[in-house]
Image (cartoon, rainbow, N blue to C red; front, side, top):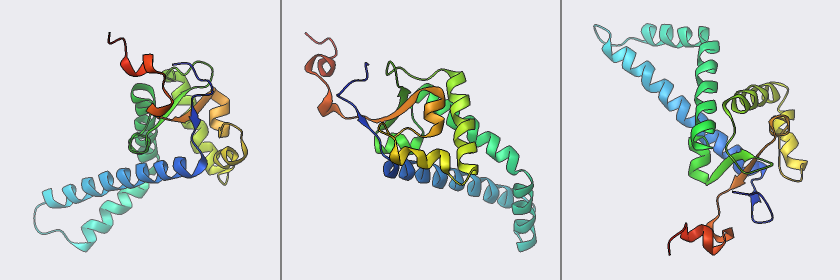
Length: 163
C-alpha cells in the first residue's frame, strides 16, 4: 500500500479512545488474573488476601509495564494495530511506504510512547498540532496512524486481482 492522498491520518481523539480501550482491556485482564488467584486459594477469599495480591501487583508494576509494552509491540508488528485500534479501524504503518513497522521500529515506538506519556504527555499531545497527526514517537520511527477506509481504495485494490 502506498501512502498518498487516499489516506486519512488518524487524529488525537480517536487515538486517545483506542488507547483507553486498550487500557480497559488490559485492566480487565489483570483483574481477572487477580480474581482467579483468589478463587484458587484454599478457603474463602478474604479482604486481606485481596489487599495482599493488589499490593503485590503494585510491587510488580515494572513487570506489568514490560508485559504491556511487549503486547503493544507484538500487536503493532503483526497486526499493525492494538485491539483498541482494530476496533476503531486504525493502523500503524510506515510513513514512507505504508508497510508494517519492523520489530525494532515497534520497540522504539513503544519506548518513546511511554516516555512521551511520562513527560506530561507532551510526546503524545504533539499529534494535535502535527499535519499528519504524528506524535513524537511516530516522528522518531517514521510511522503514521491511518484510518482503514475502503471508500478511499481504487477499484483494483478492492477487487484484489479478481477477474
